[in-house]
Length: 316
Image (tube, rainbow, N blue to C red):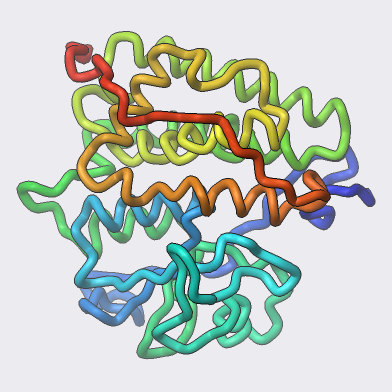
């Protein structure tokens, strides 16, 4: 199907957006079972503040105190036909590791025949000089357990006791919410758009109900599923509601989801992982098929530092 959408190659005949699979899924190991041992300083994380998938890896990187072990470089939020670029600017820099000008150079250095989209996040191995992994799901798990073994004082974002239920809820949030906003925004048919939007709000409604009697999705402490949801919620009223036409309701219209969003945002260090300037400029200036004027809206005005009452919830 030929359509004026950001990624026409990822549309099926029904006009539905089908995201490309992550191409690099090698694993870092703590026991030497893979060619990539968990050595401090060996790996570098390339991210965009604008991208929700990369944002989640940055949050886990922060929560697991990996700042001294895995370096981070942020790309320019405005992406063009050359892909993500390394430039000096507010909140982004040149590449200090390989002196790449574009992230695509890392992809082609790893696989000269790679023909997919050059996506973030990317975990780069400075020894073999190749991409180890570009899957945010894999990276979050590796950061949680391989790079930062379970020790007192650091959160376990994938507790064994809730493994099955967590995997099920994470899968639903990915399908209907995380990727659901993209399936709405990048749809090339009315039917595909409406299907994505309706599924999105059915799940948001269910999450609103779930959070009525528990502070976080699984009780008193946030796990990776909470941060998976957070990365979409924090962008929702800012860009997805208007830019992607996910406009049945705003997050601020959901009392529990809005309070939950504020609660997570106000946890130590999390606000520093959120860059609304990068988020807005990326979506409105990069997706010219959706916003050909590239005008970036001034609003909405959001204050996520307002007081909330989530701490008073006695979780079930």
